[in-house]
Amino acid sequence: MLEKDGWRVDNKCGMSRWSQNRDFWNLFDLVALKSDQPLRWISIKGKAGGYQINRKEVKGFIMPVGNQKELWRFTKGLKYPPKIEILNTATEGDTVNKCRNKISEKAK
Image 1 (cartoon, rainbow, N blue to C red):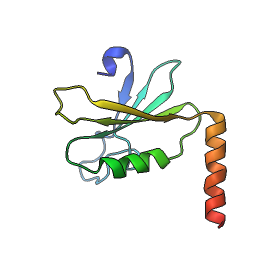
Image 2 (cartoon, helix red, strand yellow):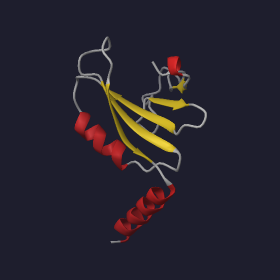
Image 3 (spheres, rainbow, N blue to C red):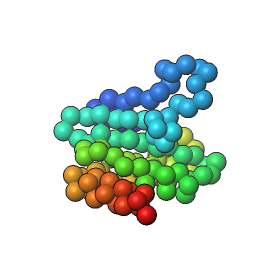
């Protein structure tokens, strides 16, 4: 799907078969790169559940400028397109403010 639109896509499937974690930072299943576009970090969920917990974790994960977090949910199976939610695209101000807020929370 992404590759048809010119994105270069990577996942961690090439890791050792004994590795228990095949996600980036235990959150993202895919990373997609395309010239002049934000780097897309994609978390994929199916019908099995855990969507709201995963959404909260992905939303709270701080990304540097030029990165976009997405949550894809396949509610009708893989034959149908996923519901895609863009959680945010990091801008310089967002990233700086989030980091400051995290530091303030830890100091309390």
